[in-house]
Length: 140
Figure 1 (cartoon, rainbow, N blue to C red):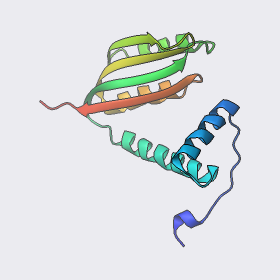
Figure 2: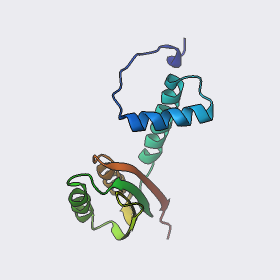
Figure 3: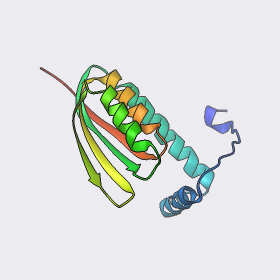
Figure 4: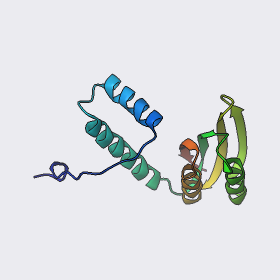
């Protein structure tokens, strides 16, 4: 038996709106069940994590982040995190998508491990919907 044939059961607690959106996507994509959709999502998350592990050396790139403007204390936390990483942040652009949602684009340059740490700190905050890091290697 291969590794994928051993199944483990887990329980999840999700906000109804998140589950409804997930159900909409898995139905649109033709998944046979939520379980199959969740397995695919976890595979994708694992792949993204492994890709992030490869971000090494001097890099230049962009972080895109969407977050809930109304999440209590989030703006202060995000600003504090960005101040901690001033050495790698070159510029940022803030856009109001709706009254409650914001899009932030952050230009970064520095060691890949620092950029990954910054991204992981941002994405772990409650109220942050998505964070994506895109980088290129700096070549002289």
